[in-house]
Image (cartoon, rainbow, N blue to C red; front, side, top):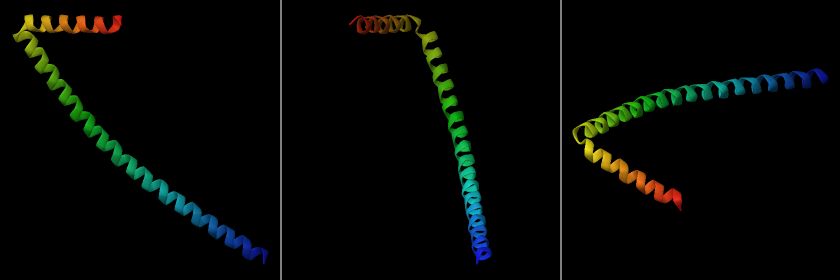
Length: 84
């Protein structure tokens, strides 16, 4: 009878190990897919930021006095907010 219980316990333990292994494999696959998606989003975001940076630089070069006036106005507003 004792041997039967030991065999049953081993079988249950073996099944638990298989189930845990399968779950870990599925989690690893999902994490890999998420990492790939995140890398693609990172590349898109980086390209968008670089494009925006180029547009701002071009606008500053084409209208430098407007850029100076906007920077001064923003600085003045920030100083007013910080002072309160």
